[in-house]
Length: 244
View 1 (tube, rainbow, N blue to C red):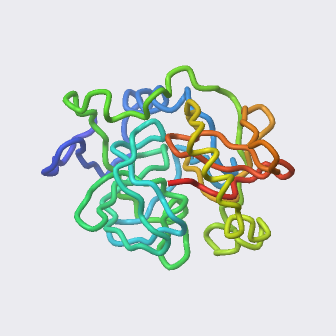
View 2 (cartoon, rainbow, N blue to C red):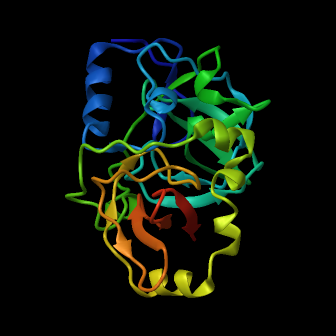
C-alpha cells in the first residue's frame, strides 16, 4: 500500500505515486458501467497518462463542476468558457481533476481543462490525489434517475475543436440560432438521464445506439446526458446546445 500524505479537506488524500493494484481495481469498478463521451483516442486515459502539476487552468468550454470524479455525480457549478480555476490534482486513470472555482471546490473533466491551450490530460508533472467517498453525502451526490442507464456505446467528439475554439464552425452556428420553441419543448418534456463517460459539450456526436427523443416539427432531438439536457442535430447527431 502506498504511503499517503493527507491533505485537509473532505473526500481526498494525495500521493505522488501511481497507486497500487487495489486502488486501480476500485477505480475501474467505478467507471466500468459508464459510456465514453468524446473521441476515444483523445479522452481515454490509460494508467500511464500524465496530468498537469498543481497550479491554475482554464475551461476550454462551459464545463460542469461535480461533487465527485465521475459523470454520475451531481453538478455543483458550471465553469464558464475561459474561466480560471485552481488545479488541486487529478485521480489516476479516470480523467477527472479536483478544482476550485470562485471559492467552490469540485471535480472537472481534465480534457476540457487547459494550461496555455494544452489539455491538462496531456501534460506532464503528475500530481495524483485519491478520492474518498463521503458516506454522509447521500443520494444527493448522484445524478437523479441515472440507475440502469445504457451501457456500451462510444460517443465521438472533436476534443481538439473544443480546445481550439472552432466548435461553432463545426456546427454551422446552429447553437446560436436555435429556435426558442425547441428549448421550451425539451424543458417541458424531461427524460431520464443516460450516463456517459466525460461531459456533454457542444460538438460531440451521439452514436446511433443511444436513444434520443424527437422534437416535433424540427430537425432536432434531445436527451439527458449526465444530468444535462442536450439538443442534438438529427442529421449529424452532434450536440448543438446544452440546456442549463
